[in-house]
Length: 237
Length: 248
Image (cartoon, rainbow over all chains, first blue to last red; front, side, top):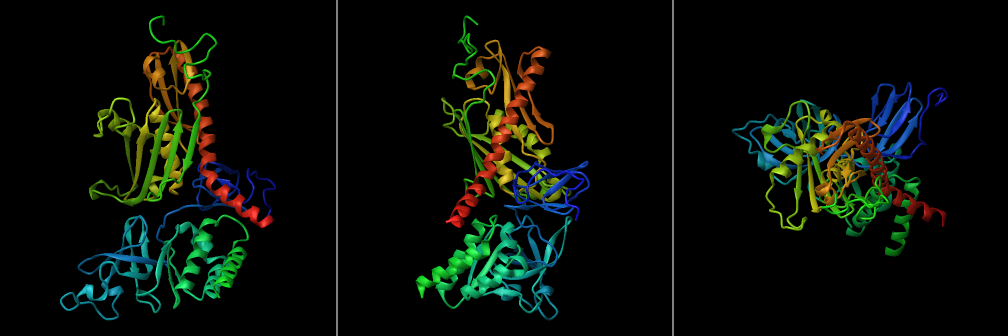
């Protein structure tokens, strides 16, 4: 990677940038949260700039969830329609869950009462199966680990922090599960389900996730969180 | 000039002690409302203004939604206690106009085409007014938009310039606005190099107008610097705190 040998860029890696900041000029690729104006690349969100060879991107500090096909999300049923449900997935768009994507047999409106399966206020773990700019996203729960969430706690974080909570190749989430002995299910839309037999463990997981959220833009976070959890447990045990 | 108040002294000092090209002291804060998706607060001299942003979210009523982009809805409102004489809380003609003007100043900055069929709602609440609230409103609203994580081409910084007591002055306060000869509010996107709002009230020669415009743009650039600082402040504080612990 001939990093910046011929092409100028203007900031250090991981420096905080604001919308409109000039990031680079020349033959670069405009990545996430940036935009190109002629030969120049600018930031479009508040975040940390990253130069990866020719690719320039900004890791946003706050975003909202925009659905993407294949994402696992946690949603809440808000409406029952003729052939399915309307689900709030914490995004600008309401999602649809068709009855045929929830039942494992053909759906007959004259026989099946939808509220027997999922009622208003129920929480579900689902997967996005379609979305584009002309239509609202649609979901499915016809996969083994998907479906209604019946116990545990749900917490909400900014969707921008989700990659940090998962960590590189899942390092952070694996550590969290191990250290707190909780089942943690992360929805890409910023909702996280935590469940465990012990309230104390759930509390620890919550504490850890709040810390990650707060310090998402700093380095060496996984180690600091591990340390915090061990210290906390030392007090409890 | 002999009749009215002396707005600018012989030494070129204004009533409130400022120089001709000096902004009022300005304090900007970001993320102060927990229920809004994005929020900001500004104090500029005696102006105190709060802005909250919600969205992108579903449009209500539904028929307002656009198939190819988001709608930006903007409400500029003055609190009944924001001025000396109680102001009726119902939106006045002036507030409706300012809502539109501010919306049109913000629209070019936001990537509305990325979020079709949604609405982005901006609420600007003037808690205390002392002239130049439309500019401060634009400044604080664009901060709230950035805080909400809405993609933008640039921050919009706004500042007025004009003529008072026979001198060209920057950032007019209420008195200078009312007693002065002219007021030119300007909103500007410095990195993008585009003027987003330009109005004029009063009389200026073409030459004076050009100078006033330059003065206002210079003011906008100063405001822009403060905006950037305010946005970064929250995160830099956390980072500094964490790194301090690291070093121990």
